[in-house]
Image 1 (cartoon, one colour):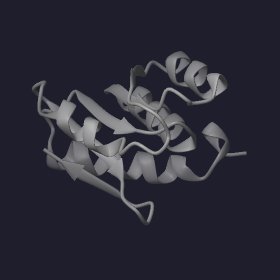
Image 2: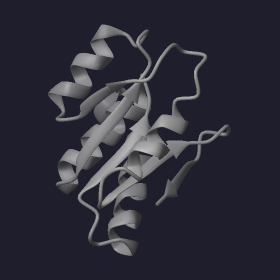
Image 3: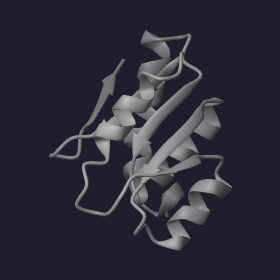
Image 4: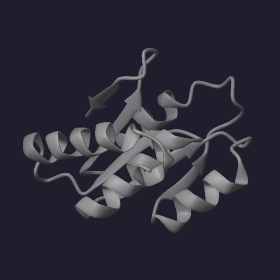
Length: 114
């Protein structure tokens, strides 16, 4: 079994390692998720010594919320499932120094935004 219960951990670790390589001053990342992507990001961020803020819809399953918090993520509520969660994550990444948003796009890939 993969950490976090899915194969998303590999992508999260690779993305955060690439981010650290290109932006060594980054101390915190921001993402949007209510599921395995968020859990994978939380595991990777914790293991790499990065802070993580996760925008979650208010309808996110309680089990996922608890898992994210247990892994050290700070949760920020971002509306219902139909709301664009990546937008608030990108916006909040500009509000604090040393923070990048890592969000999934429509095909499930991760992108970095400064």
